[in-house]
Length: 196
Image (cartoon, rainbow, N blue to C red; front, top):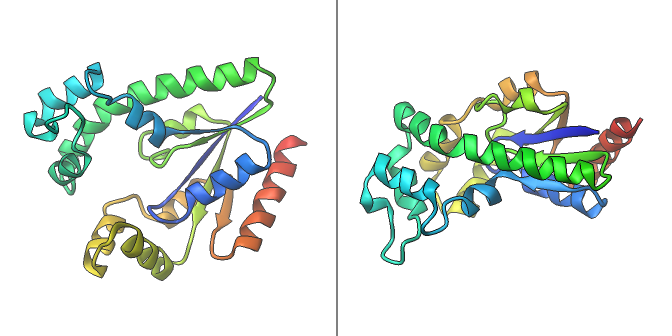
């Protein structure tokens, strides 16, 4: 039984790698999906966020205004720490429960897509880590396109994260996600190694 964490920088293509692993028949748990589920209207996590950051982060329909919350915490390390302190223990608890269920169901490899794997010290909870990288220029272009940002905004978002080269140094495996065929080949090689 192995738990493998998948991480990388913003817009490096973590989800592309995760989707390819799913296509190969392996389960991938997604921390982002869990983070959306735990802030459903009426949830205790959403209530904790409202108490911490104010009622303006709640939409009229009772859902979380993610964009507004993002703008409240962006660039403020203290507020980011407060947000992480509310969100990450719950996300981790669910990831652990879901991974254990998959192991109980007979899966030998379980992958966990966790964008902030190193930042939240989750790397200690997994057996191996995969970091997905891309050239800085490509990362900026992808982020600008995906989030409709200016070059300056994209650079600010990237700069706000742990540097990719730092993550690469901490990784067990690195997947360069610049070409689909090379990414597939690298993931195939990693899975083959993990199974042996």
